[in-house]
Amino acid sequence: MKTSHIKTHFEYGLVGILFGAVLTRVGFADYDELHNMFILSDLRMMYSFAGAVALSMVMLFLLNKRIPKQHKIFQPGTVPGSMLFGFGWAITGACPSLVFVQLGHGALPALFTMMGIIFGVWLYRKVHGRFFGWDTGTCGV
Amino acid sequence: MLEYWPWWIGALGLAGVCFAYLLLVGRLLGVSGSWAKVVGWRENRMLQQINEDFAENQNEMSDALMAETLAQFGDDAVQELQSESTPAAAPANVDIDNLESSTPWTAHLTFLLCLAVGAFATAYLTGSFELRYELSPVHTRIFGDTWEVWVALLFGGMMVGFGTQMAGGCSSGHGLSGCARLIPASLLSTLVFMVSAVFLSMLMEVMIR
Image (cartoon, rainbow over all chains, first blue to last red; front, side, top):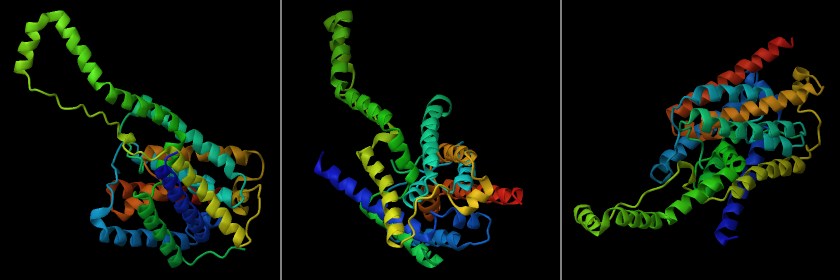
């Protein structure tokens, strides 16, 4: 393995640990907290989320020239995909990062969610190539 | 019991993570992209292989074409053709959208697994770690405690996986990074998934009452 690859792994790992710790501390690992947010009885995490967006906005504005381009576009899957994701999130309490956070927190049923996500991602890749074929602009890559 | 942060510390923390990700990784935070890389690593590698092979074989290809032309039309035709055409064709740019980065897929896997490590460390250090066979009391209240919960989670997970790939982002990619840059597609996506999650949660709350 190249040295640069080890460095990359280290950086990804470090930021992963940080992200996992913050998500736990905010309370996203807890289905009860999340459910309370979704039924609008406790908006604490919603404010955290909105506050983070606002702070990031300021940060990205200050760094404007140096941030990499992001490939996010309207495409036919935007709305139905987001709806599916929203329903799934309400049922499992897990978005693609939270499933790991739940698991790290000791909630074993999250393993089922994880299997579901793996299958869902795999399935979409199959279906997309065969039937859809438009540009989804999935994150980063 | 783990004390959750008040909202403003949470906001600082999440924004800090976005900044750290940008600083360390050089891209904007997006977890579903990592999922796509991890689940599709085999296909991605095959595509990359084909891509590289094609780039290498460019010269071979044109040589073969030239040899065929010579055999078919003889020397004169080729010389005529070469005097007419521009000297060198522009190098073909074979670039499949997804493959521009050289980040190995295992780095994305490391990132995802380290989310669990970070969560475990926090839970363990604050003494709130325990192995549980139910997601949470409220989840059990809504879905019961039989095997049907597992089916619900499996299907819910499928919806999350399929949906995030279809929408091209999740709560981090569209929600945090995309909204922070006011990208219209991300704003729409965030609105849609928040509203649908709220809708379904409310519905579940009404139904179990």
